[in-house]
Amino acid sequence: MKIIRIGKISSIANPKILKHSIEHVCREITVYPTGEKENIIDPFKARVVLKNADIICTTTTSAANILLKNTKFDTVILDEAAQIVESSAIIPLLKGSHFVLVGDHQQLPPISQNKEVDVPKESVDFIQKLHFSPERGLGVSIFERLSTEFNHSPSYIMLSYQYRMNKIISDFVSKTFYEGKLEPGIINGKNIGDQTFSDFILDNGLDGFNFKENDLWGQFFNPNLPMIFIDTINTDANDSSEYTLTKELTSKFNHKEAEIIVRVIGHFFKEIAYIYKDIDHITQILKKIGIISGYRAQNQKIHQELLKYFDENIFINSNIPKFSEDEKKLIFDSIIIDTVDRFQGQERELIIYSFVDSNPQHKIEKLNMELRRLNVAISRAKKKLIFVGNSPTLIETNPNTNEKTKFVKNILKELINYIKEHKGYFII
Image 1 (cartoon, rainbow, N blue to C red):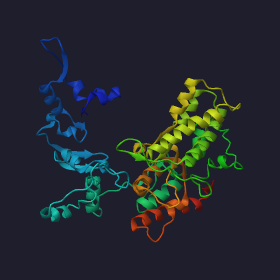
Image 2 (image 1 turned 60 degrees about the vertical axis):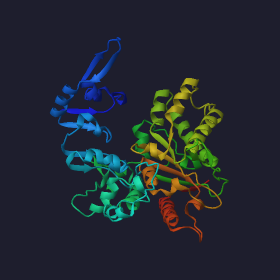
Image 3 (image 1 turned 90 degrees about the vertical axis):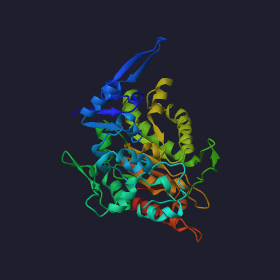
Image 4 (image 1 turned 60 degrees about the horizontal axis):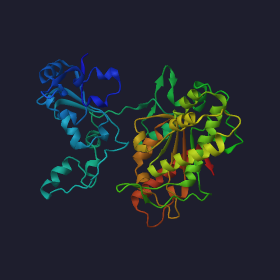
């Protein structure tokens, strides 16, 4: 099968993909009278290559490349269609007789800087027929819009098996976001939903990992507790006031939640460093966990606290190896701390999530109001998921709370109650 990729060759890291690039296949070197050289695509060779290709791969915007002008396809398959701005998605879709959209509109929507659209009065009826939402503007993907239109038709197909999460984790995701239709799949005769943190321990040669059930920090790694909620209800865990990171971005952090997360990671690290003495094994295991927060300032705070705590409490421990400065850097680089948006599409054996919002007014900000962001955070975890948050802020309402906020807080309340039912609720 002949496959050709149209797009910048500079963005290709894998040599196996490089050989399919149109720039690589049809490259010609032009020498100017000045002696200057330039790589260009031979348009005649490119036409022949594209005409004979079975599959052409491109981004939505690269589909407008002049090399594809007047080109028509039998079928256009648009991957991650729920994350693509509609105006961009239309570019390749217009080139196909049929199209297939693949995506999940229950996860993060397209990123649009300006969501408000001024719709002329004469266009209102037409816009309504298209199910276009002017107040949400480009934040609604063509996938989400058409899934609403064709939800009960043969054209709409939901893939109901997931091949990542422990059953207790996936059951909450299924009930909350997918009408209870999502269930664990089977791989090599084994139900994915039955996998636990014990499998992670055994698969990575960590048989001596001590869960220390009489130790609070050890209990968080109990294989029988796939979901943990660490509640800061009894501690001074107020979030910071908002401050500006850049002219365009405001963010905030929660010092107490950062400290708790660092203590959890510290406990985990001591156990694996005690078992494995070599840096390669340690870093490989650390790369299998992820720390997520919606706020970039919180991620920075966690990183700062991590450096401080490890230097003052972990690296001086006599039960683990002495690490060089280069090895310490490798350790910190292996602990991935990032936003929900950056984690979409990834997975980790263990996910730790910081809600950050914690205040006397019980106010949750926009990042926690977006339930699709919560779905992404939860569904990154394969075997264990640890939340750190303040339950009163996340679930309590007052007479002035609007309906949307009540709805979100009710979902968060269901999450915490669900974790309580499965014995994973702890108060710090």
